[in-house]
Amino acid sequence: MRRLPKPVRWLWYAILALIGLELVLLALGVELGGDWLSTAFQLTSLTAAPLVIGVLIVVVAARSGRAAPPARQEREPERAAPVDATGPAPAPETPPDVVAIQRASQAVIAAARTPEGRAAIRQGARLLRAGRAAMRPPPEPAPEAPSRSRRDDETT
Image (cartoon, rainbow, N blue to C red; front, side, top):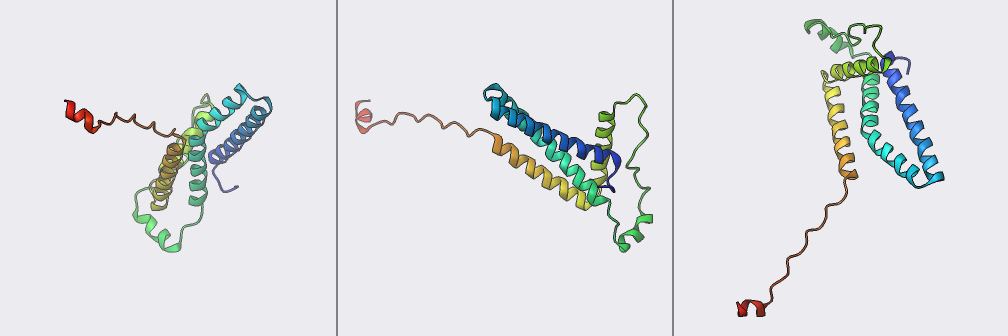
């Protein structure tokens, strides 16, 4: 946890806080029933995809913080100048949530430049598609056309 960049650490704390809020709302929904329960379920379904993306960002940032193998470190000077993951300093009037989102997007962009990061992003996209497919209602069966009997064919 300590090796995570500060914005990613704040993103992790926000994820935990949102999960805690969802659990409290679900408990209230179960206790009070009715509209509270439906509101809690709607909030949970709305925040599922952003939570998965946030967790993927934290996992990718945690994995990219490890030291690279020695062979890889030797090839590093041949590459272009490294991308500054922190980016330019935000203006003092920028809200902290905007700064966290900017830093998280920069971390995803940096991760997308590595093969491991691209694989993690593909896996996350598959997980999101599977989650969305699971949340869709089943398709309505098509109404059957009335079958024509043999007798109908003879009269026409």
